[in-house]
Image (cartoon, rainbow, N blue to C red; front, side, top):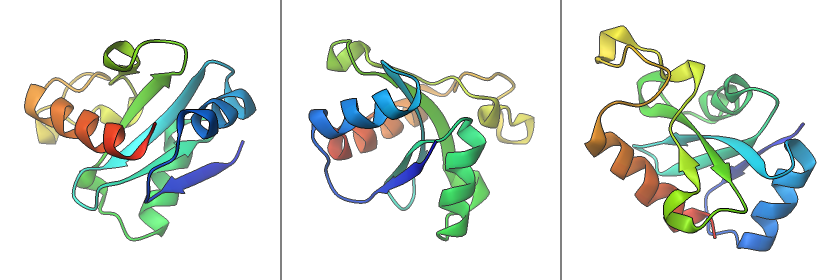
Length: 114
């Protein structure tokens, strides 16, 4: 399963194609909330995280999510990933708990992913 770095907007058809190549109706993703780029794909969120780190992202800036392609835009994301467990950053769960961070993640993803 390949990981694609998304720096400029991709449309829904491209997203659906990536999802089919990975998990069907769902695709794993990681967003760098500082650099405002997204990595999509990979077997694990860690694969997308590693791609962003190789590209220059800092570990504290990357957070995992999933997109469910067949759902409406406002319901298509969840914020659950093992890479999100960071007690030192105040996130003790696989799900991102901070609502401000979740909004930031959603805004970046929505701006790049059709």
